[in-house]
Length: 404
Length: 80
Image (cartoon, rainbow over all chains, first blue to last red; front, side, top):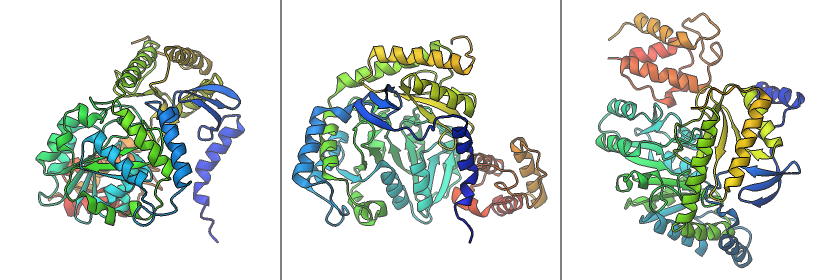
């Protein structure tokens, strides 16, 4: 018998060697208690969380928690069924209504995760003979949506309007085309030049889908994302999003004004063939989404903390993913895997949790310590994190060039 | 339409900078097994090949393009 797991020996061995040498597993962090959106207990130590997607700090919002408690009491722990069968409750509809209000769209469809929203929508919209044109740095869920479908997949250089234009120009004029973009790219935290890209896509007769996972809640006047900030809402055909970031729960969605949108509920397999979200999740998401519409104060605080963090790291000479703070993600670019792991562990032991990120999640050859801000981070916490970065860099022997 | 051997020679040139272990580049050289390229590197190489001949090599075609010779065949088929 061929052991089908043998093919993973190399990666498993690499991890084991690292653990045997006393390294702490960067993908094995356990939080034994969560104290607030920005604090948790990890390995018995109170730790500042600087690596979550809790951008708007909604996880402990009293109204969100109250909605969750009421729903679990009144509707039970789970739906035990698909949205298409017994798994749609009033609260699922109510959650979709909240999304329609938030985005000002006619239609909204809630999936069980953001991953499934991309998987389902990308694979279903583009069929045999159609083309999906995606950014090279697209999230795994977009790539997987492409693999699952039958369309031809064309990849353009990250954020290059010129490359998108050139590659669209090579495709047959009569073929169906879906250009897939992200508002914020989650590894380096850079944003897409959406106005230019959407204009190019439309010039070539393509439909446009924008994933706003890392932008919902704090880009644009109504918090609708980079699409709104770039003024192209009326040009974008589909917006994909998630509840697991600014909304603070879990789930995915697609919103649109396309008159035939509802047909997707009949044909989209990752929507049909999975259980719907538990009532507590959709009820609390709906409350959170409605609160996010008006939370200008939190948005202001999130941007202020993000700029402070970016400026602080830059002043210390760290190499960052973007020249200025473009989103709430700040990626510290590290020289190699071992230095990244050592620094990640030193930070954790100093009470600061950031994300360790490596290829293939990151662009080719890039190792990152990724920070993501929360509206609830205090100036004191930012100062503490910056001091921890200083000390950790010294501890691991990371030479920093003169401050920019 | 460019000749198959011209295409092959140019692909070998494009692979050059990515051939870190100086593996001999032949018709049957495999991108994953011999050159040990990860999927991101292969996709970046494909983008360069597309630009060289102004063609479209969709990502879904990649599983069938395991060796340099197979890529040269695909380019020869698509290039005008």
